[in-house]
Image (cartoon, rainbow, N blue to C red; front, side, top):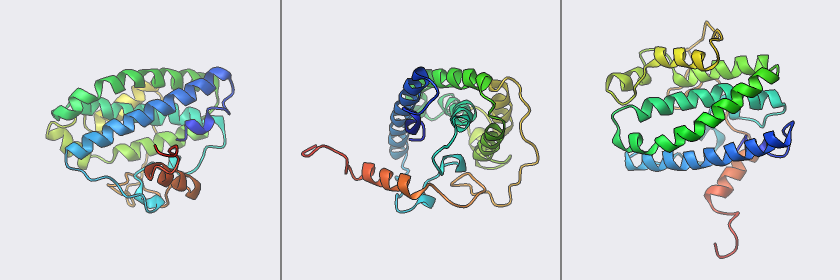
Length: 215
């Protein structure tokens, strides 16, 4: 949804189109992932309040500057893609078979983000996105490493951190992360959640309020 908010506000027409296309890609990817989770016995998350969504803080509020879009595209999207790659190469059959096409589409997202990262000075936004990406991956010896040891993920925490740095042209990741307030379900250390306007929109989509009459 945050990508879609920039589909008529990006610096160029090409970037407008890319924002819309990537937003549509990610909607499709979410549908596939949620469908796979249902098959694996995981119930849908609730939509009663913003805190029920397991999103990184970077997505809590609409982005007010193009540098935030670039940081999300280059860093957060890369972290999410790496986790999908780890799942696609793990031993959960339903994920191995369904994530291949998603990863092909995500390669375009990666190229777009890296290209804009060279054009825009997104220093503060990049630092924040990187920190939140590492928090989303989680600390060592937590659930990600347990899933790796069980074969469900092809990579553990250390490998995911290293691979993320490589995707970002070897830039040095943030150090000294604090894990005291880390939530293993929401995968973040900051309290809060998505803004009310976005929450209302997501509720409307879930309840099909925006469907044509008779749809």
